[in-house]
Length: 80
Image (cartoon, rainbow, N blue to C red; front, side, top):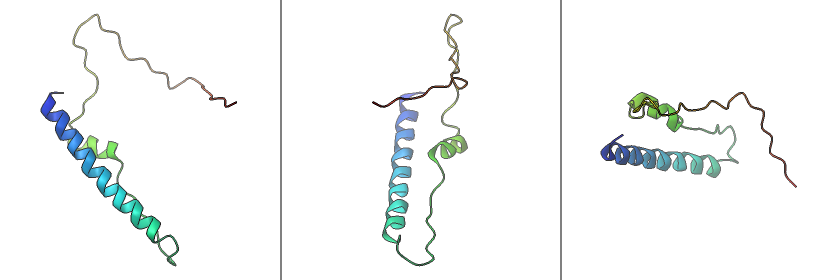
């Protein structure tokens, strides 16, 4: 990803966050309104998928290690 794409991505995320904040504020302001249905917007990850700006990892050197998949591990956080 070149620097120009990075700034474009940051700009799109800032716009998305601004819209999301407005939607959440509207939901909070109307929490006691009868029959009001809370709204939400499309997750940012879905917006990224549509733009095609972010692509998966690419191997640039044959000696580079592949990304590990830890999704099958059972990890629990213990609190004291």
